Image 1 (cartoon, rainbow, N blue to C red):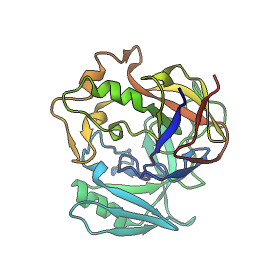
Image 2: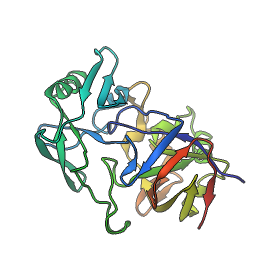
Image 3: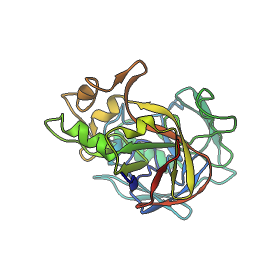
Image 4: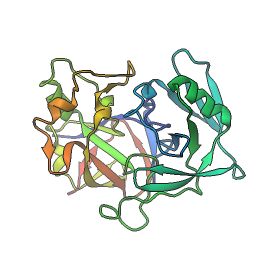
Amino acid sequence: MNPTLAALHVYPVKSCAALTPPSAQVEARGLADDRRWLVVDTAGKFVTGRLYARMPLIRATPLAQGLRLEAPGMPTIEIAVPTSAAPRRSVEIWRSQVDAAQTDAAAGDWVSRFLGTELHLVHMDDIAHRSVNPEFGRPGDEVSFADGYPQLLISSAALDALNQRLSEPVSMLRFRPNFVVEGTLPHAEDDWKRIRIGSVEFELVKPCTRCIFTTVDPERGERNADGEPLKTLTTYRRSPAGVTFGQNLIARGSGTIRVGDAVEVLD
């Protein structure tokens, strides 16, 4: 079999809609423009689609010096990347505290109106840093506002195997990967340790454990009342760590990767 990169996804604002570019720049924290913005509550704690199922309806498009936000029933808004003089705020994401840059209040007001509660939008600039769990990374490894690791990979065959078990198939975007790989057996990625996509090498460091966010339909912004596909995944993908689907990656280099690139399994 000849694995290839079938799709690329980036999520400029964590938990919001995916963009599907034909190519992406691999950076130390993840793909360029991937999860560099974060919605937080009034206490500075991160907010995701686990709590607000409508978040995937927000489409964030990177601009040269900012971000465009669009959502059903909302006026389009463009916001600027905070300058170095912008106020900073310590925000909590999982076990990390990140010194993020605050955006203009208009951005938080816009998100608050759409989701129905007071929220704020912050940005991870070059000053902000967040380390990968040292148990699975190396000293100096960093991550954006992604859950824990810079990239996530899933084989299309894994999704096919899941959909064969479901009465209603689901899309890959339920699982929010960065890389979708075709030309493999289902869950072949479980056995990979190192791969190369284009000219960039990646280390596969940890299976991705799954949560209730997988039950949110990103096209409707609603949670499935039947608990699918997580309910079915528990029947055959449960491990001591939890229900797993896909693999977390850390890049060991930088460069541009493109849809259609060969995915070479090195180890």
